[in-house]
Each structure stands twice: as C-alpha cells, then as structure tokens.
Amino acid sequence: MDFLKLNDMDLEGKRVLVRVDYNVPIKNGMVEDDTRLKATIPTLNFLLEKKCKILLMSHLGRPQKELKKGKTWDEVKKDSTLKPVAEDLSDILGIGVGFVGDCVDIKIPEDKDIVLLENLRLHSEEEKNDDNFAKKLAANADIYVNDAFGASHRSHASVDAITKFIPSCAGFLVEKEIDELSSLLNPEKPFIAIVAGAKADKIGALKVLIDKADKILLAGVLANTFLKAKGVNIGSSRYDEATFDIAKRMIEMGKEKLIFPEDVVVADKFSKDADTKITKVGEIPKDWMVLDIGEETIDIYKRELKDAKTVLWAGPLGVFEMKKFSNGTKKVGEFLASLNAKVIVGGGDSIVAVNSFDLADKMSHVSTGGGASLEFIEKSGKLPALIALEKVFKK
Ligand code: ADP
Ligand code: MG
Image (cartoon, rainbow, N blue to C red; front, side, top):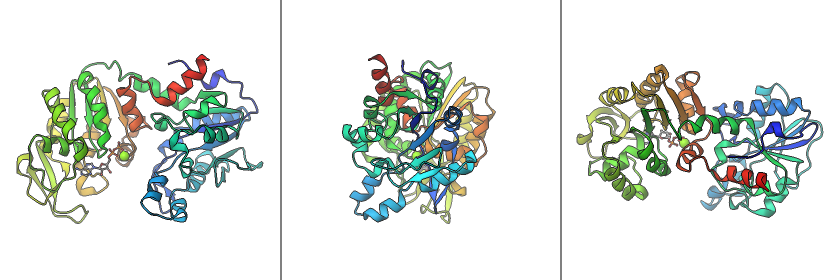
C-alpha cells in the first residue's frame, strides 16, 4: 500500500501527534508487559532527534462498555487511566514523560518534550470515528503519525477520521509490522498456523487460513467450540455459542487441515487450586473443564510443526497464566523457538506468554497486534487505518 512514512515528512521542530497502541495489561497501577511501549521507541527517538514536541495518544481497555455495565464515571476513569503508562515510558526512555488528563481541548505542558494524553476511549466519539472529535484531536498538533499497528484494524477517529484533518504518515512500527506480516500473505510452505486462546473473532481469520495454511492446529476456547460442534462432550469447558454454526461449516471446509487436541488437561474448577487430570478428548467428565492440551497433543503438534517454513502463532494453548495449565503453551512455544522457520507471534496474551517463558527473542517477529495481525491476513493487508493513510496520500 502507498502512504507517507516518517522519512517523507518535514518534521524538524514540529508538534507531532503520535497514535500509539499502549493498550497494555496494568495491575495495581503497574504496567505488567511493556512490549508495546518498547516497540514504539524507534519512532519516538527519531522524533526526539528532530527536536519535535511529541504528543502521544492511545486507547486502553473498553471504558464505554464498562459505563454501559453500570460502573460510575469515576470508577471507569480510575480503572482506565493511562497515567501508569506515562511513568513506565519515562523509565524506558530515561526522560520525564508528561501526562495530560484529557486528549482534546487541552493545554499542553510546555516543559516536557513528550507528553501522553489520557485514554481516547473515555470519549464515546472515538469508537464512532466521529469527524468533530477527530478534528479536535488534529488541532493538538502540526503532523499526525500512526504508529498504532494494534489499533489499525478499527475505523476509529484516532486512526481513521483524523487523517482527513492533518498531514498524516505511518510510523516505523507500522512499517515494520506490515513488512513482517506481509510474509504471511505469500508464505513459504509448509505454512502451519496455531490458532488458540479465547477470542471468538479469530474464526474470521481461520476462514482465510484454511486456504493459505497447510495445517491449522487448534487449542483453547476456539478448539472447545469446534469440538462441541463436532459433537464431542466438552463438559463445562468454555466455548463460544455465537460462532458455533460457523465452526460446523468450517469443519466441512477444512477437514484435512484442521488438527484438534487428542488429550487435554481438565480441571474441576477455573482455579489454580483446582483438581486436575489428563483425559482423552472423548472422555471429558461432566462438570470438568478443559484448560490445557495434554502431552500426547503436544507431541502431535510438534510433529506437525517440525518441517514448517512459516508459522503463525495466534493465542496461548491453555490458561498459561496458571502454572498448572501452562505446560502446552510453554512446550509448544519452546519448540517453535527451536525451529529453523519464520515464526510470527501475534496477540496481546500471546506476547505475555512468550515473554513469561523468555522466548520473545527467539521468534522471528512478535507482532504488537492481535486482532490487527489476524485481520491483516484476512483482508490481505487492507486495514481501515492503512486505507485511510492511503486515501489522503493519493489526494
Ligand atoms: P491473544 O490475546 O494472544 O490473541 P486471546 O485473547 O484470544 O489471545 O486468548 C488468551 C486467553 O485465552 C488467555 O488469557 C488464556 O487464559 C485463555 N485460554 C486459553 N485456553 C483456554 C481454555 N481452554 N479455557 C479458557 N480460557 C483459555
Ligand atoms: Mg487477548
């Protein structure tokens, strides 16, 4: 796709508004995984060298949804503030990062070269791709840079509408992600995809992967949905009702390509103190739930992966956050790290998983986008925010 890049812009001394994806896990006011912060450093350093004043904007979580659920504004604001991110970024950059408690109609502090604005999604207009809101965002600066690959699959004001109101370009992270993920559009074969985790919307990418991939290894909630669709009793395992029918159709379409767990780790409750056992997939006891794949499945998956030239890993193979259910994710992850293949990992929780097993450096590329990396494949690279950049470039 054709659009302006950082190197095409006259940036010297300008005020630059950078959309980043700092939608990171935060616990007790601390950033738990800073992969997405570190991934934007090349762009930030480049702009600092050009003596730019940098304004950063991002979303975090789903505050509008929390409001709809009945939480008060104060609760939501407290839970979804980006303030802890500004502190973490200060540590990474080694310079003080300022923070402003809103993202529009604001006074920008003059004493800081880099300032993070408050969570975009505290304004409901953000997710509506609202022109007036986008105009107000644009009024903050001279130039706009999209370095939020992880948010580029959505038509939201800060990545889409904004490009109509300010000179716009892509940042280094967006460029790099496109470069790396493009190799999945025409992958060197054999191409094996591991599609796991909990998010049901991954089924959209599966539709395309059934054409492109040689094999698709399933696990997690996604596998549960498919197993149930095949008529397997999955006990009290989590599965997705809404994609049940699509799963049935896909089993028809992709019979030889879809590989399912043969044995699983089941638990009597969703807890680190649960009783657990390994069972064959056909023998999952009533009231027990699948929380990881078993050793036999790990071996089968390794066998499928061993000659791969390209691998896409999208989603943990079990509830890796609890040690008891981390074995499948860890073992398959370690095996991927040992392969002589292009291995691309995508997804917020997948990033946490590869980091917790110390495997990130051993992968070819760890994408900062979960949904975005899958939609990149699904839409052959044509993500809404990239289309927006292309449109203004062609004008
Ligand atoms: P990603 O963020 O990498 O795209 P997802 O958000 O789709 O991944 O899913 C990650 C979550 O899936 C993890 O929190 C993990 O605990 C959960 N998960 C994996 N396997 C299971 C399972 N069998 N049952 C319930 N949750 C699971
Ligand atoms: Mg996730």
